[in-house]
Image 1 (cartoon, one colour):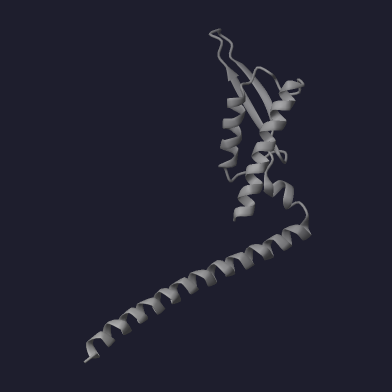
Image 2 (image 1 turned 90 degrees about the vertical axis):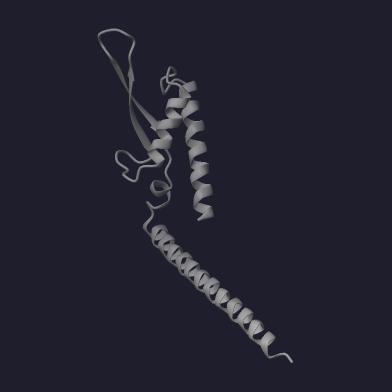
Length: 136
């Protein structure tokens, strides 16, 4: 649905902006490149399994500085997700499900209409073709 896609896009942009701000004020480590956070957020978007605290993304960033010890830094970043924001309210969730079913019904009706309209156009063409044979 277009509205859901627009909301998701807005939440992604907001997550990026908030994480950047958190880095600027020192809550998130400043030495983590923005690209790493961006890739982590995109990877999180593409997974269907959501675990951990709502709207938070836990990362383990490994830093190899050519020494014997590898530094692993745990980082928690903001990752806003529509299902964790919108559907925590049971009444809203119920209404959202009703709306989704209505949209599905409308899509099914549109598919049926397109199919019937195509059959109608074929019948008109066949009728015109047959009438061209009868003309004297």
